Length: 343
Ligand code: AMP
Ligand code: TRP
Image (cartoon, rainbow, N blue to C red; front, side, top):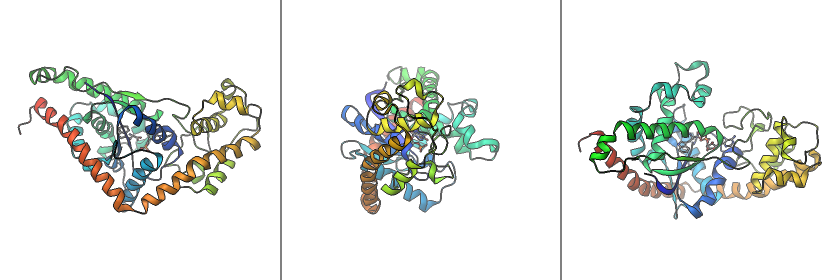
Protein backbone atom coordinates (compact mmCIF):
# COMPACT_ATOMS: atom_id res chain seq x y z
CA UNK A 1 0.00 0.00 0.00
CA UNK A 2 1.22 3.44 -0.77
CA UNK A 3 2.07 5.92 1.90
CA UNK A 4 -0.66 8.37 1.01
CA UNK A 5 0.70 11.72 -0.04
CA UNK A 6 4.35 10.68 -0.23
CA UNK A 7 6.27 12.11 -3.17
CA UNK A 8 9.59 10.79 -4.48
CA UNK A 9 11.61 12.13 -7.39
CA UNK A 10 15.19 11.96 -8.59
CA UNK A 11 17.58 13.89 -10.80
CA UNK A 12 20.82 12.56 -12.21
CA UNK A 13 24.05 14.41 -11.47
CA UNK A 14 25.36 14.11 -15.00
CA UNK A 15 26.32 17.37 -16.68
CA UNK A 16 24.81 20.78 -16.03
CA UNK A 17 21.21 21.24 -14.95
CA UNK A 18 19.11 23.13 -17.48
CA UNK A 19 15.78 24.90 -17.84
CA UNK A 20 14.05 21.62 -18.82
CA UNK A 21 15.10 20.02 -15.53
CA UNK A 22 13.92 23.11 -13.67
CA UNK A 23 10.51 23.57 -15.31
CA UNK A 24 9.76 19.88 -15.93
CA UNK A 25 10.84 18.76 -12.47
CA UNK A 26 12.51 20.91 -9.78
CA UNK A 27 10.11 23.88 -9.91
CA UNK A 28 7.20 21.48 -9.60
CA UNK A 29 8.79 19.80 -6.56
CA UNK A 30 8.45 23.01 -4.54
CA UNK A 31 4.65 23.43 -4.07
CA UNK A 32 4.24 19.70 -3.34
CA UNK A 33 5.94 20.39 -0.01
CA UNK A 34 2.72 22.03 1.18
CA UNK A 35 0.59 18.94 0.65
CA UNK A 36 2.95 15.95 0.64
CA UNK A 37 5.84 14.40 2.51
CA UNK A 38 8.60 14.83 -0.09
CA UNK A 39 11.78 12.87 -0.76
CA UNK A 40 14.08 14.38 -3.39
CA UNK A 41 17.11 12.38 -4.42
CA UNK A 42 20.29 13.05 -6.38
CA UNK A 43 20.55 9.73 -8.23
CA UNK A 44 24.31 9.31 -8.46
CA UNK A 45 24.08 5.53 -9.00
CA UNK A 46 21.96 6.18 -12.09
CA UNK A 47 24.54 8.67 -13.37
CA UNK A 48 27.33 6.06 -13.51
CA UNK A 49 25.36 3.91 -15.98
CA UNK A 50 27.42 5.96 -18.42
CA UNK A 51 31.01 6.95 -17.61
CA UNK A 52 31.41 9.84 -15.15
CA UNK A 53 34.66 11.38 -14.09
CA UNK A 54 34.73 10.97 -10.26
CA UNK A 55 35.54 14.63 -9.47
CA UNK A 56 32.89 15.75 -11.94
CA UNK A 57 30.34 13.37 -10.33
CA UNK A 58 31.01 14.93 -6.91
CA UNK A 59 30.67 18.44 -8.38
CA UNK A 60 27.44 17.61 -10.21
CA UNK A 61 25.95 15.88 -7.14
CA UNK A 62 26.49 19.06 -5.11
CA UNK A 63 25.11 21.14 -8.00
CA UNK A 64 21.82 19.20 -8.08
CA UNK A 65 21.47 19.37 -4.29
CA UNK A 66 22.14 23.13 -4.45
CA UNK A 67 19.47 23.54 -7.12
CA UNK A 68 16.91 21.74 -4.95
CA UNK A 69 17.61 24.08 -2.05
CA UNK A 70 17.96 27.28 -4.13
CA UNK A 71 14.63 26.50 -5.81
CA UNK A 72 12.94 26.44 -2.41
CA UNK A 73 13.02 22.86 -1.17
CA UNK A 74 13.38 22.74 2.60
CA UNK A 75 15.75 19.88 3.52
CA UNK A 76 14.73 20.06 7.18
CA UNK A 77 10.98 19.69 6.64
CA UNK A 78 11.48 17.14 3.82
CA UNK A 79 14.31 14.81 2.71
CA UNK A 80 17.13 15.67 0.30
CA UNK A 81 19.91 13.09 -0.16
CA UNK A 82 22.10 11.28 -2.66
CA UNK A 83 21.11 7.76 -3.61
CA UNK A 84 24.43 5.97 -3.04
CA UNK A 85 24.38 6.77 0.70
CA UNK A 86 21.30 4.60 1.16
CA UNK A 87 22.50 1.19 0.05
CA UNK A 88 19.00 -0.29 0.25
CA UNK A 89 18.41 1.26 -3.21
CA UNK A 90 20.98 -1.14 -4.68
CA UNK A 91 19.65 -4.04 -2.64
CA UNK A 92 16.04 -3.62 -3.78
CA UNK A 93 17.17 -2.96 -7.36
CA UNK A 94 18.80 -6.40 -7.35
CA UNK A 95 15.55 -8.06 -6.28
CA UNK A 96 13.76 -6.11 -9.03
CA UNK A 97 16.38 -7.24 -11.57
CA UNK A 98 15.10 -10.71 -10.81
CA UNK A 99 11.46 -9.65 -11.21
CA UNK A 100 11.64 -7.52 -14.36
CA UNK A 101 12.08 -9.24 -17.73
CA UNK A 102 14.86 -8.40 -20.18
CA UNK A 103 12.20 -7.78 -22.86
CA UNK A 104 10.67 -5.02 -20.72
CA UNK A 105 14.04 -3.28 -20.48
CA UNK A 106 14.77 -3.64 -24.18
CA UNK A 107 11.55 -1.81 -24.98
CA UNK A 108 12.45 1.35 -23.06
CA UNK A 109 12.81 4.26 -25.48
CA UNK A 110 15.36 6.05 -23.25
CA UNK A 111 17.54 2.94 -23.40
CA UNK A 112 17.16 2.68 -27.16
CA UNK A 113 18.02 6.37 -27.58
CA UNK A 114 21.05 6.19 -25.30
CA UNK A 115 22.34 2.87 -26.62
CA UNK A 116 21.70 3.65 -30.28
CA UNK A 117 23.34 1.14 -32.60
CA UNK A 118 25.75 0.28 -29.85
CA UNK A 119 23.41 -1.78 -27.65
CA UNK A 120 25.85 -4.69 -27.19
CA UNK A 121 28.51 -2.34 -25.92
CA UNK A 122 26.73 -0.20 -23.34
CA UNK A 123 26.91 -1.05 -19.64
CA UNK A 124 24.62 -3.67 -18.17
CA UNK A 125 23.62 -0.93 -15.70
CA UNK A 126 22.17 1.18 -18.52
CA UNK A 127 19.83 -1.68 -19.44
CA UNK A 128 18.86 -2.29 -15.80
CA UNK A 129 18.45 1.45 -15.09
CA UNK A 130 14.61 1.34 -14.79
CA UNK A 131 14.84 -1.41 -12.21
CA UNK A 132 16.94 0.87 -9.96
CA UNK A 133 14.46 3.67 -10.60
CA UNK A 134 11.58 1.42 -9.51
CA UNK A 135 13.56 0.60 -6.37
CA UNK A 136 14.04 4.34 -5.63
CA UNK A 137 10.30 4.90 -5.73
CA UNK A 138 9.02 1.69 -4.15
CA UNK A 139 11.48 1.62 -1.22
CA UNK A 140 9.47 4.57 0.08
CA UNK A 141 6.10 3.26 -1.19
CA UNK A 142 5.64 6.69 -2.77
CA UNK A 143 2.15 7.57 -3.97
CA UNK A 144 3.26 10.20 -6.52
CA UNK A 145 6.30 10.94 -8.69
CA UNK A 146 6.64 14.38 -10.36
CA UNK A 147 8.70 14.06 -13.56
CA UNK A 148 8.95 15.36 -17.10
CA UNK A 149 7.16 13.65 -19.94
CA UNK A 150 10.23 11.61 -20.94
CA UNK A 151 9.93 9.52 -17.76
CA UNK A 152 6.38 8.31 -18.38
CA UNK A 153 7.45 4.92 -19.71
CA UNK A 154 9.76 4.34 -16.73
CA UNK A 155 6.86 5.03 -14.38
CA UNK A 156 4.71 2.50 -16.23
CA UNK A 157 7.49 -0.05 -15.83
CA UNK A 158 7.67 0.76 -12.11
CA UNK A 159 3.99 -0.17 -11.84
CA UNK A 160 4.60 -3.38 -13.79
CA UNK A 161 7.42 -4.36 -11.44
CA UNK A 162 5.29 -3.58 -8.37
CA UNK A 163 2.38 -5.63 -9.73
CA UNK A 164 4.58 -8.61 -10.65
CA UNK A 165 6.30 -8.61 -7.26
CA UNK A 166 2.94 -8.44 -5.46
CA UNK A 167 1.67 -11.28 -7.63
CA UNK A 168 4.74 -13.56 -7.62
CA UNK A 169 5.08 -13.29 -3.85
CA UNK A 170 1.35 -13.09 -3.02
CA UNK A 171 1.43 -16.20 -0.79
CA UNK A 172 4.49 -15.04 1.10
CA UNK A 173 3.11 -11.52 1.51
CA UNK A 174 -0.07 -13.02 2.99
CA UNK A 175 1.92 -15.36 5.24
CA UNK A 176 3.79 -12.34 6.63
CA UNK A 177 0.42 -10.76 7.41
CA UNK A 178 1.10 -7.83 5.05
CA UNK A 179 -1.33 -6.01 2.76
CA UNK A 180 -1.99 -7.73 -0.57
CA UNK A 181 -0.88 -4.62 -2.47
CA UNK A 182 2.54 -4.67 -0.79
CA UNK A 183 4.08 -2.30 -3.32
CA UNK A 184 1.75 0.49 -4.49
CA UNK A 185 0.96 1.27 -8.11
CA UNK A 186 2.57 4.70 -8.00
CA UNK A 187 1.10 7.56 -10.03
CA UNK A 188 3.25 9.88 -12.15
CA UNK A 189 2.60 13.61 -11.89
CA UNK A 190 3.20 14.93 -15.39
CA UNK A 191 1.26 18.14 -15.90
CA UNK A 192 1.47 21.82 -16.72
CA UNK A 193 2.78 23.77 -19.71
CA UNK A 194 6.38 22.55 -19.45
CA UNK A 195 6.47 18.76 -19.29
CA UNK A 196 8.75 18.71 -22.33
CA UNK A 197 10.96 21.75 -22.94
CA UNK A 198 12.57 21.71 -26.36
CA UNK A 199 16.01 22.83 -27.55
CA UNK A 200 16.32 26.56 -28.28
CA UNK A 201 18.02 25.68 -31.56
CA UNK A 202 15.56 23.04 -32.80
CA UNK A 203 11.93 22.85 -31.68
CA UNK A 204 11.76 19.15 -32.53
CA UNK A 205 14.57 18.12 -30.16
CA UNK A 206 14.27 17.87 -26.37
CA UNK A 207 16.41 20.28 -24.35
CA UNK A 208 19.06 17.99 -22.91
CA UNK A 209 22.30 17.88 -20.97
CA UNK A 210 23.92 15.92 -23.75
CA UNK A 211 23.25 18.31 -26.68
CA UNK A 212 26.69 19.44 -27.93
CA UNK A 213 25.39 22.99 -28.52
CA UNK A 214 25.49 25.17 -25.39
CA UNK A 215 23.10 27.59 -27.14
CA UNK A 216 20.45 24.85 -27.21
CA UNK A 217 19.84 25.07 -23.46
CA UNK A 218 19.75 27.57 -20.62
CA UNK A 219 21.89 26.25 -17.79
CA UNK A 220 20.72 26.95 -14.27
CA UNK A 221 24.13 28.49 -13.55
CA UNK A 222 24.03 30.84 -16.59
CA UNK A 223 24.29 34.53 -15.70
CA UNK A 224 21.71 37.16 -16.71
CA UNK A 225 23.62 38.10 -19.84
CA UNK A 226 23.89 34.51 -21.11
CA UNK A 227 20.20 33.81 -20.41
CA UNK A 228 19.06 36.91 -22.34
CA UNK A 229 21.41 36.20 -25.27
CA UNK A 230 20.28 32.59 -25.65
CA UNK A 231 16.60 33.59 -25.65
CA UNK A 232 17.13 36.40 -28.15
CA UNK A 233 18.99 34.02 -30.46
CA UNK A 234 16.50 31.16 -30.11
CA UNK A 235 15.29 29.77 -33.44
CA UNK A 236 11.74 30.85 -34.37
CA UNK A 237 9.53 31.10 -37.42
CA UNK A 238 8.82 34.62 -38.80
CA UNK A 239 5.10 34.76 -37.90
CA UNK A 240 3.72 36.83 -34.98
CA UNK A 241 2.29 34.99 -31.97
CA UNK A 242 -1.21 33.55 -32.41
CA UNK A 243 -3.99 34.57 -30.05
CA UNK A 244 -5.00 31.04 -29.04
CA UNK A 245 -3.37 27.64 -28.48
CA UNK A 246 -4.70 26.18 -31.68
CA UNK A 247 -2.51 28.67 -33.54
CA UNK A 248 0.59 27.01 -32.01
CA UNK A 249 -0.04 23.76 -33.87
CA UNK A 250 2.73 23.05 -36.37
CA UNK A 251 4.87 25.80 -34.78
CA UNK A 252 7.09 23.86 -32.35
CA UNK A 253 9.51 26.72 -31.61
CA UNK A 254 6.71 29.19 -30.85
CA UNK A 255 4.93 26.55 -28.76
CA UNK A 256 8.12 25.94 -26.77
CA UNK A 257 8.82 29.62 -25.99
CA UNK A 258 5.20 30.25 -25.01
CA UNK A 259 5.31 27.15 -22.78
CA UNK A 260 8.49 28.43 -21.10
CA UNK A 261 6.89 31.83 -20.48
CA UNK A 262 3.76 30.16 -19.07
CA UNK A 263 5.72 27.86 -16.74
CA UNK A 264 8.01 30.64 -15.49
CA UNK A 265 5.04 32.87 -14.68
CA UNK A 266 2.71 30.11 -13.36
CA UNK A 267 0.18 30.87 -16.09
CA UNK A 268 -1.41 28.74 -18.79
CA UNK A 269 -0.36 29.04 -22.44
CA UNK A 270 -3.84 30.43 -23.15
CA UNK A 271 -3.24 33.27 -20.65
CA UNK A 272 0.12 34.07 -22.24
CA UNK A 273 -1.41 34.17 -25.72
CA UNK A 274 -4.29 36.33 -24.51
CA UNK A 275 -1.62 38.83 -23.48
CA UNK A 276 0.82 38.48 -26.41
CA UNK A 277 -1.36 37.34 -29.33
CA UNK A 278 -0.43 39.33 -32.44
CA UNK A 279 2.91 40.47 -30.99
CA UNK A 280 6.10 39.83 -32.95
CA UNK A 281 9.27 38.19 -31.63
CA UNK A 282 10.82 41.62 -31.16
CA UNK A 283 8.31 42.15 -28.36
CA UNK A 284 7.91 38.63 -26.98
CA UNK A 285 11.57 37.57 -26.77
CA UNK A 286 12.69 40.56 -24.65
CA UNK A 287 9.69 40.02 -22.35
CA UNK A 288 10.60 36.33 -22.01
CA UNK A 289 14.27 37.18 -21.43
CA UNK A 290 13.34 39.62 -18.63
CA UNK A 291 11.05 37.07 -17.01
CA UNK A 292 13.63 34.27 -17.26
CA UNK A 293 16.36 36.47 -15.79
CA UNK A 294 14.10 37.59 -12.94
CA UNK A 295 13.40 33.96 -11.96
CA UNK A 296 16.67 32.23 -12.80
CA UNK A 297 19.39 34.77 -11.96
CA UNK A 298 18.63 34.97 -8.22
CA UNK A 299 18.45 31.18 -8.11
CA UNK A 300 21.80 30.87 -9.89
CA UNK A 301 23.32 33.23 -7.32
CA UNK A 302 22.01 31.13 -4.44
CA UNK A 303 23.14 27.89 -6.10
CA UNK A 304 26.63 29.28 -6.55
CA UNK A 305 26.78 30.37 -2.92
CA UNK A 306 25.84 26.83 -1.83
CA UNK A 307 28.23 25.15 -4.27
CA UNK A 308 31.05 27.27 -2.87
CA UNK A 309 30.38 25.75 0.57
CA UNK A 310 30.63 21.99 -0.08
CA UNK A 311 30.87 21.05 3.61
CA UNK A 312 27.40 22.46 4.23
CA UNK A 313 25.89 20.71 1.21
CA UNK A 314 27.56 17.43 2.14
CA UNK A 315 26.14 17.72 5.66
CA UNK A 316 22.64 18.28 4.27
CA UNK A 317 22.99 15.17 2.07
CA UNK A 318 24.33 13.06 4.96
CA UNK A 319 21.56 14.13 7.28
CA UNK A 320 18.93 13.48 4.57
CA UNK A 321 20.43 10.05 3.90
CA UNK A 322 20.27 9.17 7.60
CA UNK A 323 16.54 9.89 7.61
CA UNK A 324 15.86 8.19 4.26
CA UNK A 325 17.74 5.05 5.42
CA UNK A 326 15.33 4.53 8.32
CA UNK A 327 12.35 4.49 5.92
CA UNK A 328 14.18 2.36 3.36
CA UNK A 329 15.24 -0.21 5.93
CA UNK A 330 11.63 -0.68 7.06
CA UNK A 331 10.66 -1.74 3.54
CA UNK A 332 13.79 -3.87 3.02
CA UNK A 333 13.23 -5.75 6.28
CA UNK A 334 9.83 -6.79 4.92
CA UNK A 335 11.16 -7.54 1.43
CA UNK A 336 13.91 -9.83 2.77
CA UNK A 337 11.33 -11.83 4.70
CA UNK A 338 8.92 -11.96 1.74
CA UNK A 339 11.64 -13.20 -0.62
CA UNK A 340 12.97 -15.79 1.86
CA UNK A 341 16.36 -14.36 2.80
CA UNK A 342 17.51 -15.47 6.27
CA UNK A 343 18.87 -12.80 8.63
P1 AMP B 1 17.55 13.88 -15.79
O1 AMP B 1 18.39 15.06 -16.06
O2 AMP B 1 17.44 12.98 -16.97
O3 AMP B 1 17.87 13.19 -14.52
O4 AMP B 1 16.09 14.47 -15.62
C1 AMP B 1 15.64 15.01 -14.41
C2 AMP B 1 14.19 15.46 -14.51
O5 AMP B 1 14.08 16.52 -15.48
C3 AMP B 1 13.22 14.36 -14.98
O6 AMP B 1 12.01 14.49 -14.26
C4 AMP B 1 13.02 14.67 -16.43
O7 AMP B 1 11.78 14.21 -16.91
C5 AMP B 1 13.09 16.18 -16.44
N1 AMP B 1 13.51 16.71 -17.74
C6 AMP B 1 14.70 16.48 -18.38
N2 AMP B 1 14.74 17.11 -19.56
C7 AMP B 1 13.55 17.77 -19.68
C8 AMP B 1 12.97 18.62 -20.68
N3 AMP B 1 13.64 18.93 -21.80
N4 AMP B 1 11.72 19.11 -20.47
C9 AMP B 1 11.03 18.80 -19.35
N5 AMP B 1 11.52 18.01 -18.36
C10 AMP B 1 12.75 17.50 -18.51
N1 TRP C 1 15.29 8.44 -14.63
C1 TRP C 1 15.12 9.79 -14.15
C2 TRP C 1 15.64 10.75 -15.23
O1 TRP C 1 16.51 10.45 -15.98
C3 TRP C 1 15.85 10.02 -12.86
C4 TRP C 1 15.31 9.16 -11.76
C5 TRP C 1 15.95 8.13 -11.14
C6 TRP C 1 14.05 9.29 -11.13
N2 TRP C 1 15.18 7.60 -10.18
C7 TRP C 1 14.00 8.28 -10.13
C8 TRP C 1 12.97 10.13 -11.33
C9 TRP C 1 12.86 8.08 -9.34
C10 TRP C 1 11.82 9.95 -10.51
C11 TRP C 1 11.79 8.94 -9.53
O2 TRP C 1 15.19 11.85 -15.28
